[in-house]
Image (cartoon, rainbow, N blue to C red; front, side, top):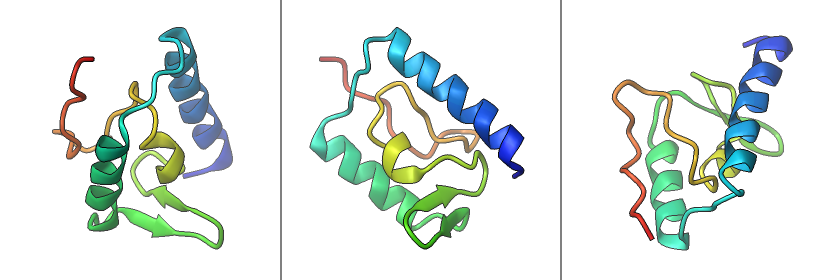
Length: 83
């Protein structure tokens, strides 16, 4: 994924996150998301962080945001429990 497309994707994710008041998932939900991503063949390991091969996002950041979803169709991440 080129840097232009990655920037647009990240801006969309960040905008949705901010508009909803920057909600984060619980620690259990975060750990579950990271576990799912760690087993995914689309995960790309970088020097400082891992990225999703489908959307190009930093997995550790995206997994924290309650507004984010896994880009697989259907999503591999479970739905967030309403608080």
